[in-house]
Image 1 (spheres, rainbow, N blue to C red):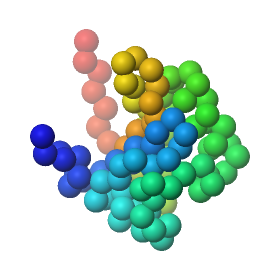
Image 2 (image 1 turned 180 degrees about the vertical axis):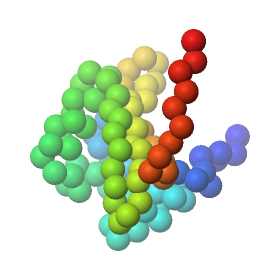
Image 3 (image 1 turned 180 degrees about the horizontal axis):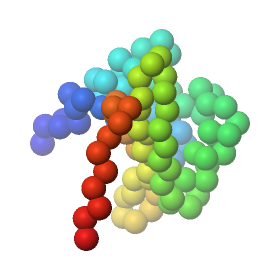
Length: 109
């Protein structure tokens, strides 16, 4: 199977249950280039106390986290969610995508 996520137009970063980065797609490597290639390194030291608390919470409970940010004048949506192997939490996936300042919203019943 091809690495379908590698050239997606959003950053995809995956860590294991210990916080070690096991995958970064091309956009994630570009986004976090100032930190160098994080694959094989622990992401916990790169985060503040509040973020570390959320990472630990998601790993313990299986809950997801979503929010928007503006960074360098660019608005992004961040979605973080656990990934599982045989039903057990194996780590986290973060998808970061650029979004417009104004977005349409549709209610579909």
